[in-house]
Image 1 (cartoon, rainbow, N blue to C red):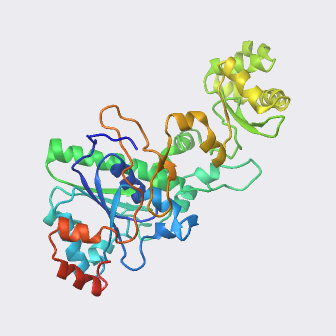
Image 2 (image 1 turned 90 degrees about the horizontal axis):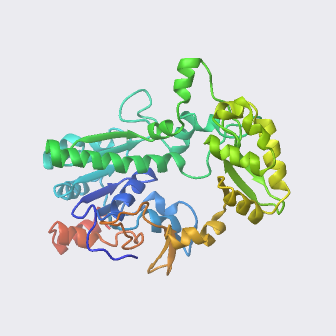
Image 3 (image 1 turned 135 degrees about the vertical axis):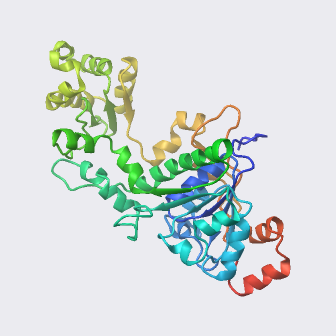
Length: 402
C-alpha cells in the first residue's frame, strides 16, 4: 500500500446502507479515495455480499474487496431504536447510499424528508433496479434484469445463438461507477453552489442502456434493430477473436482505417487497402467475411507469441484473451500495480484490484480489507456518536445492534 498524507475525499463521511452490488461498489470507490465509509449490515443476517461468490474457510473473498476501507456495524434499521441510531449517524454524514425497494425508508420513518430535517446538507443516493417512480418502480431489480432490458443481452452472442448475459455483475458495476460520479456532482453543488443536499434517483437500468451505444437512435431514425453478430462489430472490420496455431485466442480491433491498413498489409492482402470501400469502417464491415478469412488464416498459422510480436512491430492493435491466471501473471498489470496484495487478518495477503485510477496529488489507497460483521460497532456508536457503553450493551441484547 502506498502511504499518502492527503486524500481527495478526506473528511467526507459516507453511510453505506446498500447491498449487492452497485451501492457497495460506489462506496468502495469513495472509500478508496479517503472517505470515511461506515457500512451498515443487518445485525444477525449480515450483508448479502458475505454469501456471494467463492469463499475460503467460510470467508467471502469478494467481501474483502467490495468492503475494503469501510468500517462495519450491525444495525437493524427496521426497529425504531435502530432507526433512531441511524438518524444520529446521519447528522454528521455527507452521503447516505441505500438500495431498498422504494418506500422502505419511508415505512421505517427515515425517508428523505426526515433525513433532510436532521441534516439539510445530506446527499441521499437511492439505487434501485428501475428508479423511484414509474410502472416498474416496485419490481425487484437486479443487474441481470437490466442487462436484459437495456438491449445488451439481445445484442450479445452469436448470430444463430440465444441472447447472452454476462457471467459477472456488469450492469451493477457500471451503475456503481456512475453512481460515484453522481455523488460527487451533488457534493460539488452543495459545497459550491447550493449549500443543501439532494436526493439522487439512480436506476441500474439507465447506465447500461447508455453503455450499449446509439441502438435506440438508429432504430428511431432508420427503423433498424441491431442484431447479434458474435464478436464482430458493424462499425468496423477486422474486429473479432481469432485462434492461434497453439490454441490460444487473440482479439483484434481496427476501429481506425490506418490500423486496418496495417493489419491487411501484415497478413499479405495490402491490395485491399486501395479499394474505395476500405476507407470507412462501415465499408470494411460490408466485406467482413473476406477480411476475417484472411486475418484468421494468417493468425491460425502462427503461435500466439509470434502473432502478438508481429502485430506489435506493425503497430497494429491486438491483445491476448486472458483468463484470471493470465491477468495475475501479466508483467504490465503487475508493474503498474493494477493488482495489489493487501494484508488481511483472516486470509493473509489478499490479491485484489487496486484503486481504479491514479491521481498525482491525492492518490487513493487501500487501508484495509473488508472486516468481520460488527467489527466497528462499538467504535462508531461510542466513539463517533457518544453512546454510552451501557446503552450499546442494551441495544446489543435487544438485537438492534451487533
